[in-house]
Length: 158
Image (cartoon, rainbow, N blue to C red):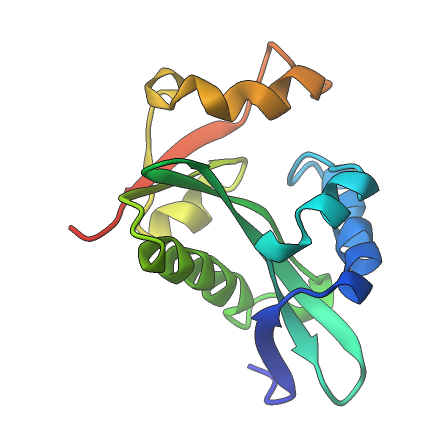
């Protein structure tokens, strides 16, 4: 891994870069896009890998608390030129650690990257076992109600 990279919580000045990352990932079919206004509203949920030397961001992820015992890993992205260095693993691990620090029991993701999340300890589940609260964002999705993402869950503290 590049020694110039630091994992940190996102700040307001990171939002436009995060938005560009998510647009790029959406164009690649890796994840669903999020509106810029939504990212400003949820900037506190994001982690970023910051390249201190060059002043750019290498990747991002977000942890969204959904209910009293469950959170979602979302908006995971690593720049193409920074992939295969373990950054995605570290971004997901940061989300898992934060969820555990909040006392949450479960963490899930809706993804197209089943193999990646399987390696992080997530297991495929039926979407129906997730609480209805998670579907609030789905109503505005272009793929609603025909979602093709894979639901995956990891139990914490077990």
